[in-house]
Length: 261
Image (tube, rainbow, N blue to C red; front, side, top):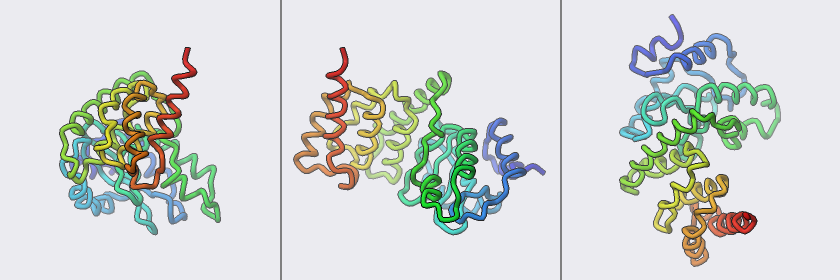
């Protein structure tokens, strides 16, 4: 019996190309001795997280997910979206409850995982845990193909509709923002301008500013004027951990605009 057979029988819909990766992962990748390395879970182990994910993300517009990797010694797991706009993407949950994709395909996670194991050592390397759970190279630093750009633009638009209509008090409201920001291709960043508001969730605003700077979205400058002024007058973005992020983002984009012919 193939590794994935019981998952498929459970109704977890995994495309053939990802089935091949996961079955190969099970058959060829040895379990690491490192306590921080996420290991592939058996079907029985994965199902132990089913109630947790249902309680946490039940009804989440991004889709349903399964925990396919976890660690033995720290509270952390890796989830795979198997339905909805985020289908086929991978998130890494450790600490804050952020289930936005870190890898836009399973193949990118496969490549990243093997590179971290190759380039870092669990024997006294301070970067080892960070590279798996904190200092993650988004999508393995790989650009989107034209097909992926179109696909994730459409997926982000679906999430933005849910984000606009959601109650900010909902448990997964922040994750709608986080997921949208993660998957929206940079070339469409101006579509985020309507969300630039002092009334927006402050943790979402922190990621939003980072996204706009990354995308070099100079069209956001007028909206950022008001946000930067609100921050100057006491608005705390990102729970107060990111001091002056709106003003820094505004200044950076303004400098880019001035350099343009």
